[in-house]
Image (tube, rainbow, N blue to C red; front, side):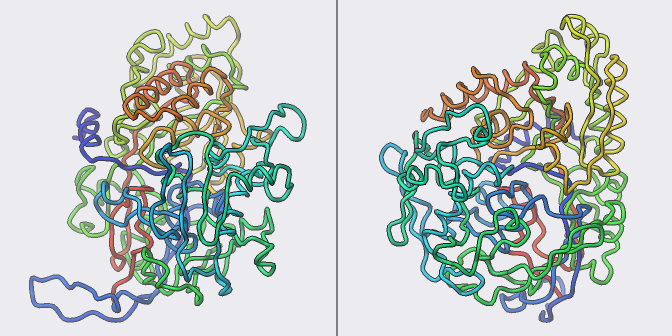
Amino acid sequence: MLRSDAWLRRALAIGVTFGLIVAASGGGTPTQSPTGGASVPPGESAQPTEESKKGGTIYILTQAEEWDDIDPQRAYTGEDLAFFGGTIMRALTAYTYSEEAVTANTLTPDLATDTGTANATADEWSFTLRDGVTWEDGSDLVCEDVKYGVSRTFANDVITNGPTYAVQYLDIPSNPVTEGDDAVFLSAYYGPYNGTGQDLFDQAVVCDGNTITFHLNQPVADFNYTVTLGFSPVPDPTIHPDLPDAVDQYTLRPWSNGPYKIEEYTQGNGGHFLLTRNENWNAESDPIRPAYPDRWEVLFGIDPKVMDQRLMASQGEDAYAVMYGNVQPENLATVFVDPETPTPDFADRAVSDYDPYSRYYWIDTNKVSNVKHRQAMAAALDRDAIRANSGGDFAGALGDGVIKPNIGQDYAETGMWTGLLGQAIPDNGDPDYARQLIEESGEPMPALTWDYPQTPTRDQEAAIVVDSLGKAGIQVTANPIPPGQYYGIVFNDDQAHEFGWAGWGPDWPNASTVIAPLFTDKGGWNISRVHDQDFVDAVQDAIATLDRAEQAKKWQDLNKLAMERVYVIPTTFGLSQVLAGTKVKPIYQWAPWGSWPYAVMYVTP
């Protein structure tokens, strides 16, 4: 059996794997096969040619009833980023397609001709765009389109929930306003729709022909990783008047600069999302995406249990399908021998691997402001039952923070469960100690509501949360939310409750992409609504630290401090299992997003 200590050793040995936030199950369904394939001598495997890989449809099955977001500046869920990035959205740089994690996490040029050039102090970065890149209407994608896409990140009144590294790093003053309607803007530049501070943005982001230069407010040695997120182009309306940016509506129909384009998007149970070939995509301008299938079709509203059965049977169109989610716990023993090995019947189409994500429960620190109350919640929670409900050894190891061991040097044990909260906390919780912490708080414990993206497994998890905290006298009401709507609701101050389910993986192998996003407003996620100024200042100091070993120690200390203050309750360092139909290749977990390798997938006869 896989033990926690074995998991830690293996995770550290794997090398760097990273990704993004895990929402609920994503979308999809199946289509038809291509033709081709030569006869092969007995005992030898057919190696498909580039031509034989082309054609057909790949289906994606998902429980979600819509995408969280398709907007290039708003999309921020790992599997979504992998799918959109492989089909309709390009960035200046991207990650390499490989089954090997270290290779996969290596940057490669995408829209740019190389991975970027920095000045000696790493506070200025330049990228030159490739020739021949076009939008789906055939118009040229130009430097100003990249600049315009980045500018949208600053429109915090309408462009919400996405990565905000541009706001953190570009050399534009922070917004001094703290009250009133303007408080939503994090920068003195309010974005292209308002226009306030446009001159500041134009000084920070400069186009010179097909070269774009970013002037930063501090050294950022890995800024060429930053531009993979939230820096994707959007047609500049002054250059492309026929491709207007409809602000809020762009999330439903972004313009493609990849090999596919959106043909249909119907939300809701039974809805679907259809991509067809973009006839104006120039393959010579794209070194990453071979674009094998003719179509991608995502089928929404598939019950996870039904999804498992359909893919296990792999009949008809389901033979050309992949799941956007995870194998349900009750089917793990059928599909896998152990957490590392598929059974013979599923050997070439099931994957179990350590994903990039740390699972945790965020706590709104405004609504639960007493740190002793948050510590009591952590002490009472039966983390062992939660792990068992998610698949036991198949779910991964119990976590002790938001930085996961396989990030590398930024991880260190926090001691959260071995004394950081005042005494050791057993894996199944300690309701008596939780009551003691509530008593020490000097205030009555408020009633709580736990928000979660609903699946059958998480319905059972909700019962564990309610029961285990109830044993400490903490009243909890479970609030199921449709998966595709979850993050839109929990980021809404009027709709979110006191705590809820979440998961996060680094955007690249530096904990600057974990601690800063999760616990600062500039970081762009901060569901916990953390505003402790000493913590925020320490994060900014760590970001600006160029000595990598010194920076790593600062991230370790901040992770420990966040756990001591219980901004979140960590549950597991995730291991995930996925399944595909018999006629989809290649089958592996792509390390950057912990996803299917969408850009290089194809169907077989």
